[in-house]
Length: 428
Ligand code: SF4
Image 1 (cartoon, helix red, strand yellow):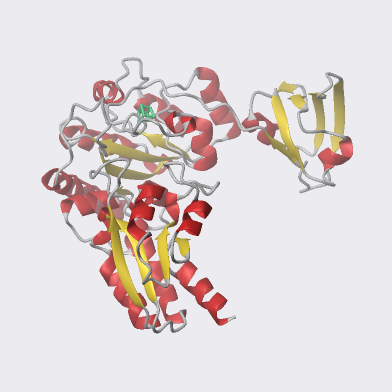
Image 2 (tube, rainbow, N blue to C red):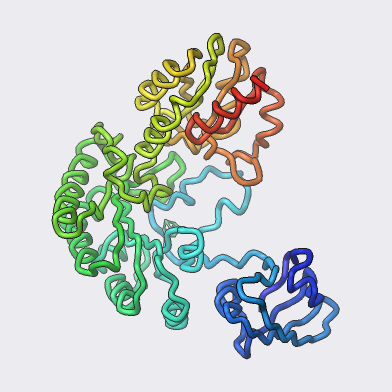
């Protein structure tokens, strides 16, 4: 059973009298367990939907849907599948205490992997889930492999009951499912020969593995489970060597790089980041693979269309991780606009100094960085610091923070987005 959260006005559902709170029980005789069932079972145009109205009345809707027309129903959010692992490097376990409750949910949900690109380990996947993945062709899936070696994976996931990932992936691949895979690497555990084995096993799965990413372990001062070594420059460099070796082979045999080091890995190893062409269609950009290259491309593509902004002073708040890469971008923006840009590097007060990612800065960091800056015309902050509800990780509300600061503050993804719009607003 799934429950209706919203009905679009004038939609088929609205005309049928489906209301908020209606329980949708089955479609064409098949029980509904979650949003995936609803989405896939209602793909037909002839539907018999069994439902229970909020007053308890049971109703059967017979629907002949005009081709392409939506039913007009939004469902209540699904109950997220919880994670059965206890990885030492788990970022959730490395969160500071006192944050809002939903940030502590350790999800491991193949449905969200398919729908939103969340990584899942597949360690809580049961036989019926495999059947659903195959029937609904939930592809591609984003899979946290970490290691294909079964024993190493049990240690990494801190879970002696994890299934054999090679067998799982092979079975799904045989059914036509494809994957984007990641290996979060803990020095001494799944680097070296273990990583070699993982890349070799994934390579053998052929076209089923669309991409593979190698990501360094990220530890905060609250990562109480972690007993391993931190990733240093030498270890990061070795990982990049292995990535380069495999991507060379992939280029020869597949015509694409296939395996990628995360941006963080290049920064840790103090190596130059590859250009945008290296990343193909940026299939793992949300995983920090090619985000810097993408930013550079977007700035290069948009900077010449920016209007002059002579005399203005623009503050750019970022984290330490990006600080070294910003001056080249800022120089381009200054050249094109005539404005004076100032890079303001903020330290993460919530996670501690080891977390240097700009997108994890919190409201308090932005406030500290900008509260006394009466000299700035505007300030740009990383848009990734704010969620869809306009709230920072530390529960600071963006609009309230903005109102308290002495200059207009704009969340920005790539500078161009805000500077084009802001200049137009000033000119208007
Ligand atoms: S799989 Fe590991 S890292 Fe992911 S949520 Fe579970 S414990 Fe955390």
